[in-house]
Image (cartoon, rainbow, N blue to C red; front, side, top):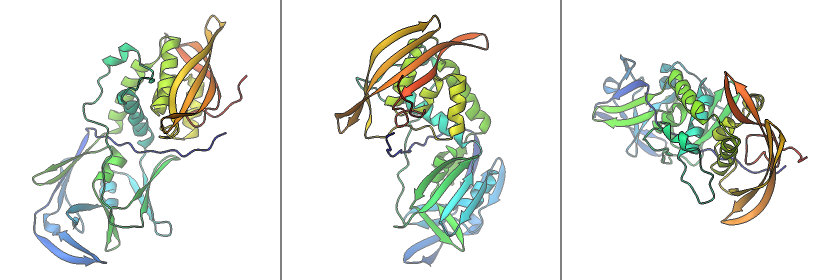
Length: 341
């Protein structure tokens, strides 16, 4: 089994509940270590959360032209538990819908990634999906400290950690830039004349979007199944791979809590060739694939995968899904390695 690093760096903006922060421009200067900081007066720091106007306790910090918000307080206004471990310098945020949100991000990445000449195309009917018009993007943050803190998102054992350099402490309170609410809660951030507007999706909205995508992507032919599986590896979308799997394999993936980004930027999955196709039974096909792993634009290694696709009848509809996968799988896909037969 190969051991390679995984990377995660995707965040998007959605619509849902609204947080609306307002500030006046009266400022009080203070010293924060060697940093010159400014605190906006508490009387001018208000937040409108679901129609309720609230005061931001301790105010909003402004450092080097950037505003920082009290992390614990704002997260708790969303009904989310948060804790701080001083020894490990780790913030843990218990977001009970993050795994679904991360899956949604993976679908969007798989559907919107720019096609290379070797990237498998998805079925034409997928074009009926209404993909959000806003771009997937990473928020560039500024560095306040050389030593980061860790922000860990925990969803019932599904954990993802980030290193944060754009933070500050005041009166034992942790402040961060608002971009973290985009990363943690998929929030849309909009600067307005009165301050900052934060919009984040409800669990019901995320579930509805997932159901819509999964319904359209459910493969109706073996060729569609293969396209989801191959493209999912090429664009590092675990979600596309997930849509190609049988119910049993889907449960296996969910139990692993491994996340929805597969592979790495280097080596990455390049051209995939179908070496063999066998009709094992009327409702079963076995494909042998050769997957080129690319490193700095060159073929680093070619690995083989053996994919068994069967017809399943689910809720009265026929779908072709992967019932078994073998080969060197654990790096490029959601599934563990298994010896070829």
